Image (tube, rainbow over the protein chains, first blue to last red):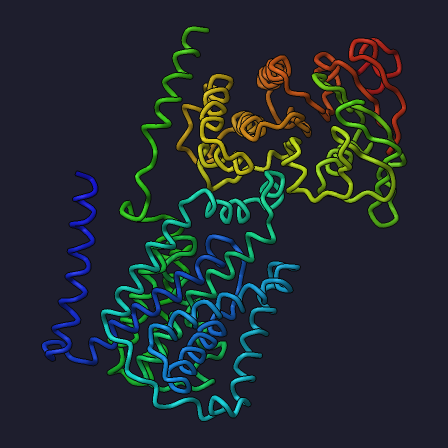
Length: 325
Length: 236
């Protein structure tokens, strides 16, 4: 019964995605709206992957656009230079970005806090400068002629899968380790947790998904250049993250949807949208410093707690306790 | 061979010599306590054993294995659990999650389940608070959770740093009663305490530390009757 229910649930979700894709193809939905929806999906992947480091692990990384850049460029090289199918470039982008993130973790996690922030920012700058001077990928002119491979259904499935994967990791005993490190690093180490390695794994996972998002983004716009991936892009992600709520997957989704949507809705205001957006953010920070969702989650995101199992121990222990009294 | 052997251990923090060559041992099944004033080096000793602080000189072995060259997260796997001063809660996680995390080094589900039952029968209060965040617990409950967590990871030897700190006398009594019970079930305990009176009462053997050296040793009873200890730590 439970299985049928969940199959039905996911079928409806998938059908919804296909419906939007089809409506877009036959131009019942404006292509502009479709692109905004795609952008929202990509931002959700970016923000929730950043949330693993800044929210659940409790570190402060501010160079996430660097991993997005490696993903975008790697996938573009695959499709443009080697004429590989997009799916292959997409996977390669994720894997390599994850690997690069892991390697950066080696020096980065010898330190923490402010120092880690500086190192990640530095890495972001290194990537951008490298791309700016690499003639093979068009240097500052960027790469053109990327196939239009990203469509709504690609982004939709990638976003949903990302959220499912993150949710399952975060609520597993392994994912709890990250929260434990955030809450009390010393105590975590005393429990036999290899703190540095756990942090590096988190970093690699976050980098991997940022790379995937980069690949989607590049093949959506069909054009990438280094200046799209500067620290300003990283700041955008941080803004969405802190708007939605650090340490909450629901918050990441909400932050990405609100901020992306808001900037599009305010497009008519011209330059003023760059004022109104931040003002709204300041107001939210003043009234809700932990972001809209704080570290809470929607019920649907939380796993069905093994409450009954716990209840069994409780009643057992309780009985014993009562007998003693 | 004793379970834990510490020989000529020296630890320095910069120019300060926190431990000036202390030696002691803990036999299997004992409760050994280190008493002494602030700055005597009690906490440093525990931290060095569990690998949180590195030593300048000396030897620490656990069941024959050299601990000084071992990383902290491996020492836990040898069977030593450290309950740090200030309890080391994961404040935003629930009681259950705190306990589950302690089973990280244990893979067998049946064992974990058995440990849950054992912990909840020792600390019925925790079972009532199972889904509550650790930071919302009272000081005494947090200390119970800290000890419970140590039991979950099933160490052969538990290092306890000031379990009585900041607790009401009645709770201190309760904690010490439970420590004795755990010990009877076969867990060896190395206890660091400022509350020398309680510590000496339950200890099999005790060592008195003063500015980084062991100045006295003996059975718990002997030391609690010793005039010098009485004057210095038991209030005359």
